[in-house]
View 1: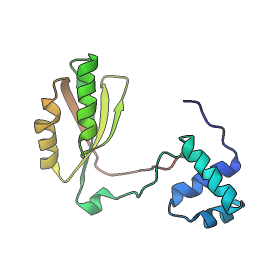
View 2: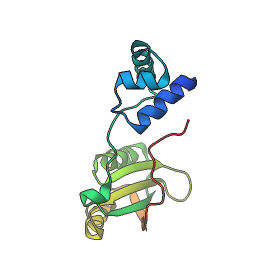
View 3: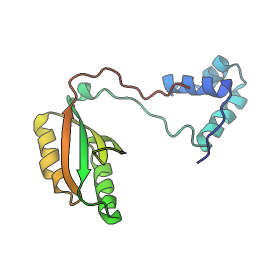
Length: 155
């Protein structure tokens, strides 16, 4: 997919939408110095170009009883396409897995897992992750404290 060239107005629109995706088009247009119709067209173009992937609320896991968080480094025993596809499909379907990255280095995949507590995490490991045929092993790094958490891209 090609990179999109952004001008200053595009950057300002994206900055404002990342800060508050519920801002009205009229307020957005006013803050960027555009007409409402021009602003709407510009935002639509950014959506259609795939720059804006989706809109949503950012939830704080601990306020919802999800106080355990870990980074899990997963090593695969099998790297055949079918085994990898099963692994990816299975991990993507799990609600505990917030992020999954295929990476270089000793681990093949890195997961960010959020659960209620250590018992729930142990259940995730024993009853799910370690039962996937492609998984050889996993190393867990428990998150002790959140230093920075961001979903905002600085443009």
